[in-house]
Length: 210
Image 1 (cartoon, rainbow, N blue to C red):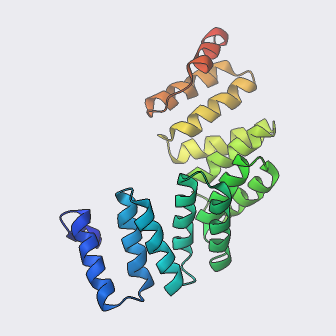
Image 2: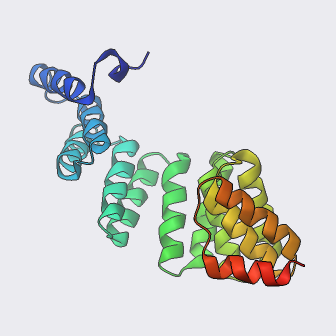
């Protein structure tokens, strides 16, 4: 049973963590756990304060930098997200998550070559990192490198069959390659996972997959 599961609700858990911090205010782990609890309530300012306290008391806590990056991304601050994740990789070079996040942000910023470099590192350190595989597929697709896009997106959906965005992107790649029947199948699987495939794309598939 996780620590949080011992409590009736997240507010009780937060109260318990605050009591722990009164007894030991320099415990980076407790600050971090409190930040995660606030995040679950979408209380971003309190969460950010806790993660900053966690890094102040435990400067090598890479997970806290990753969480600060996530909060930056939530605010639309791509550069902030990039910087926090870069610090995380400096603290723990073989931690896959920040490398995956860096790749995602670099792709958003239009630097697909560096994005691919980071995403490959993420997958090297965690071969089952579905999000990184899917983002790598998207990065290759953005460069017109369709075979590599296809390979990585297929791996992503094999590992996580209900990952809608990867099915959608796989359908886009298959459509680009002229394999409309496969695109139709992938689009159906994207929809089955709850992902909303754009209607214009569904219409295009319907016209061509005959």
